[in-house]
Image 1: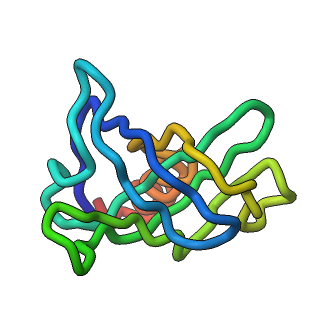
Image 2: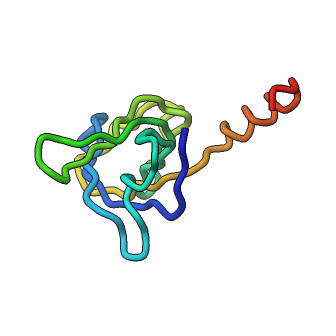
Length: 112
């Protein structure tokens, strides 16, 4: 698991499929700045949102990058993968509350 600061891109979401990342907003960096290639993310638009974890990978065309929506942690759709209308959305890197809950448990168990 890896983290990076100020990661925020626009991206094309097609229903419940992967996200085609389109580039960083001004003043932000791309998901490519995350060292491991897998990360926590948020997709949002209006009242629809999804927090998840997945890898970023390159496509067939140079500089084409996708975010895979593998694991959904929480969402506006009862914590299921959101079936977004096709369009451009805001996608950013985050550290979800679940990550800190897991750290508290490991600390309590004396594992960290």
